[in-house]
Length: 186
Length: 275
Image 1 (tube, rainbow over the protein chains, first blue to last red):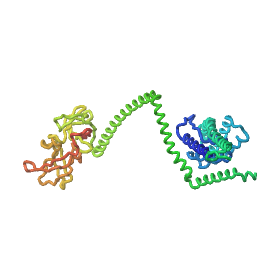
Image 2: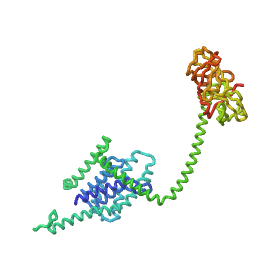
Image 3: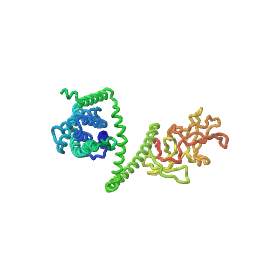
């Protein structure tokens, strides 16, 4: 049961990697959404801090595969962001749609800004801010818009599997059912 | 703080961070792809290909219903473009053949700097008369009777009749053509007269007549013009195919295979005589 959640998380991350790499998703103002990022953040909200960090690393690996960045950069960023998302949503804010949108926007904005600095600003290209305006900003907005859908999906994956785990333990304890599901007499 | 440092969370975070920095350092130093990236990319490739092909199949299916009007317009535009391009191809072919003609003329002109040249094209030939044909240039362009007609391969004939914008060429197969020629390949530079022959002309051969009995010509020798006021020198006529004795027994003649197939010429160069 525990592994079922992780299998689902990895499979969906892989699926989103394929989707964002192909032409299925429509271009809006020449931008495509990065689906893995908000998915990782939304799942991290429902996971423990350790699990959120590991998920961030895994999703970061997927992000790094088809990007032109150093392998491990996105993993490191997502490790930190998923940990923060898990901490923030458990201690400081309620889990609601607006908070999810704001959180995703801030984290993805910061992630894109880091890439923009290391890839373009430092290299001192001409008209770099045009790249920010025409490429990064539409991508940030488009990705943030997809966050609510991914939040619902991540809730189904994380919350339901977690709920089923809890319920199954309670059920088996209450009915004195052993691991193989057979009743025994106390 | 100490509790945090000893906690499971810190150990996981530390391990993850350390391994990620190790991976980044490895990639920067070796510049080779990490095995994780290779595995994920290899796994993603068939899935990506499958999704892309499915995506295009669905798009094409729906396009056939909704984009008919657009395809029809595009088809009309492309048809017009094809028609324009076809015209351009015809123009290009004409320009190309004209270019070839001009190059030939330039080559001949460079070889015969004392003569003026005029390019002309084949117009027509009488079906029963293999020895003559008509070209599309005449006295209007300075051509006169007796001017030599040739191609880049060799001599074709001479102008016999001239009108304002047409001329008749009598080829070297003609019986009334008399062209002074020389066999430069022979030891003694044998000279003779190239003309047509009733028996051989129908086969496409002419002869060089009035060769001495003690000539040194041999089969395969190249016959060219001798050069005088009417004919430029060193224009290839053909090569000797066979040598025979004349009926009178006093001289010999050689059957010549012309260098240019005079039955198939299209574009010729007329060398206008000096006046």
